[in-house]
Length: 113
Length: 117
Image (cartoon, rainbow over all chains, first blue to last red; front, side, top):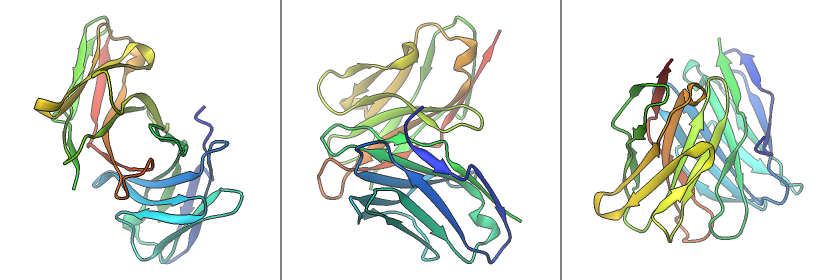
């Protein structure tokens, strides 16, 4: 158990819809990262939050957004969903000190019908 | 921009045989390097990490990896593979735009390991 909790585990929805993925980091971790794993693109970094503020951005679509709340949990919002958004979405967290690895949750599998 | 290449998409070994999974990276500075393992339907589990210091790092489950700067490589090894090692293995390089302790990971495409009894 990595200590990172992601809900829900599975999500099935239709094109054009909006969904919210939730992540609770390990206790004490201030940084939260979101990654997308798809068959064609592999594992890609989307966005990082640190203590409530956006820290770094990767290949995140404009239809996607994220936030980190005062209790440090994070949500990834995906809107106007397309078939190509079907993927496994991972959240990871890390501590603030140097040389801290990222620990991953079990992911949310999103299926767009 | 950083990148990671895992040349082998799929490797099959017999149980008890030795294993080496290759990883080459491209990054302008001293990299943070990682190996993660993903079992079917599971998340990513950290096997080992390199930040600095000793270039031979030990990880969990009997795995080790060696950082070779001259070859831009960070190959994963295990002397004797167990059937439970069958999974997909990902090499990753960590890079920070701000130079701080937080970094984003760039992953290779993964190597799928099959273990024959």
